[in-house]
Length: 141
Ligand code: HEC
Image (cartoon, rainbow, N blue to C red; front, side):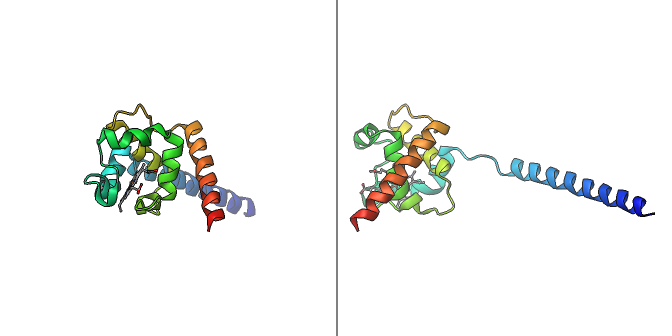
């Protein structure tokens, strides 16, 4: 009798686990990865389409040239931390660094940079520069 109950319990546990896994997989499918273009259009476009408050305007190659020359890790990190009129993370606390970086790469490509969506190695370099930038900002104040 006890063994029968134990087996039933294990079976219920298995069904629960399978259900949870199936559910998690479905959740992943229903929230597809966002492209840099999508993030740009949701968030960055508000300022970068018009160049409001001196934001480097989308597709303006002359303005973007010296920024692109800073390098993908440096420029992305500084924008992520925030610089003058550029709010940290573009004002989106819910944005991941990876998604933000894709939006930066998308904007840079529109100004002729050969920047790809960041791979793991590039993301690591961006994170290092973010840490460096944050600690140098802290030391100044
Ligand atoms: C509220 C307006 C606003 C929004 C929204 C915004 N930006 Fe900016 N951004 C600015 C301004 C203003 C600057 C220029 C800052 C300066 O150099 O004075 C800037 C500068 C930048 C720069 C250049 C940084 C540098 O080091 O000079 C990058 C890259 C950038 N933004 C990326 C983004 C991305 C990516 C998004 C969306 C996720 C975004 N911005 C959303 C206003 C905005």
